[in-house]
Length: 122
Image (cartoon, rainbow, N blue to C red; front, side, top):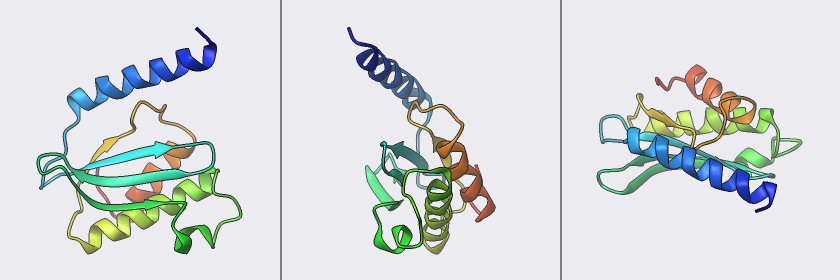
């Protein structure tokens, strides 16, 4: 097995282990963070209904146009602020944070801190 494949398998195991414990409800949906090398994505999900309440990413034109790069912590913070604003507009102020197996530092931490500063509680 290559090192890259080992990393993917390990992250998938961490992701599944976290998903066994983290469940989004209507009162407290799940804030799921996913990232790629170029973009970062955030969704607020009600797992009981299987419904995405709102989403934000660096691929959104209104977010991307104000950024110099879509692949840094500054971009992640912009996505965190946007997802929090969109959630508050829908009446969601408490969420469960799901980092999807990613380590809590760098872009993931920047997104979480920006969402907290913008009004989400988790």
